[in-house]
Length: 317
Ligand code: XMP
View 1 (cartoon, rainbow, N blue to C red):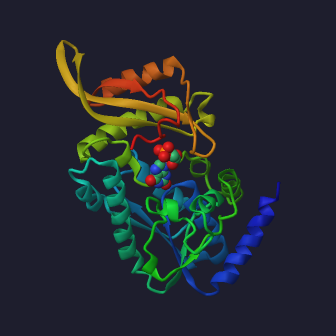
View 2 (view 1 turned 180 degrees about the vertical axis):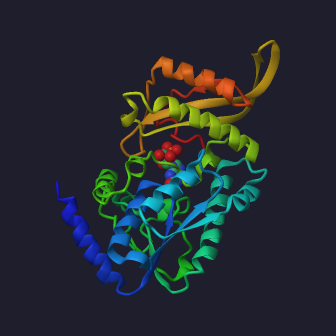
View 3 (view 1 turned 30 degrees about the vertical axis):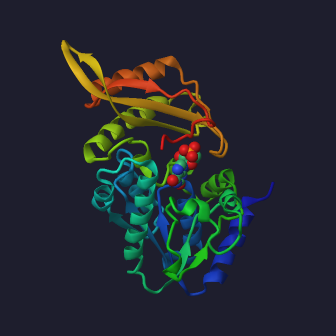
């Protein structure tokens, strides 16, 4: 048990020493790790840090706007890139999960590289690598987050010629959250549930297009809206909706419907490696299902995922 306040002071000093007069760039994802890494680094070197936030078109309802607003309050220098069209056209017609991930990873690198080129005097790339990422990748070299990086916001080409700055690499997730709180990062960011780099692409099964993404976004927003006020909510690792490319028959008023299925997934976990499905109260499930069928065009059936990890994974793809 160590003093994180003290750790912050030491790390701020270390970042200053390391970077000297150099400029630093980083990719922000809206998540806890990249946000805390950026705020910590900004405390050390101020506006010599430039942050790039790429909207890949696979974020949740209202998420890009929310995240930008939160970053504004943290007075980070954020360069916003809306690359939605680039990502969606690269994904058109693709259904294979691994292909989706690969395309998204590669597209991210292309988009980020192009943006980063505008900061040609940058010498460092800041990454929100945590201790478990370092362990998982099995080595402590320069690209410590190799295993995750190919599908993470930090996943960048080796030839970028930037030195890597990883101030959080000794911390666990809960310590990153505490550090964020000490640095004044808003609770909305600090207590954020994990969200995969490939975003809604791995929750929108089958072909991805604007219409199906919109359907998924609405269903997902309703579930999260209904579950957030439950007393058990704080112990949830992730709660979200999945859209299946399967149509089933339903009835609305006195006419027949033929629409897709939304699945609700809520899990508890410590590190994402194993997980148990959450026994969400029936009344919350009931309200969620009714609202989704009433309010979301394109869905006439709601199902609940009651599998743990293993044998299932948390995400469906
Ligand atoms: P799975 O689905 O493998 O997910 O049980 C375990 C945890 O990791 C998250 N996840 C990802 N995070 N990029 C990320 O940054 C990814 O490509 C990715 N895939 C899964 C998932 O949300 C869960 O918390």
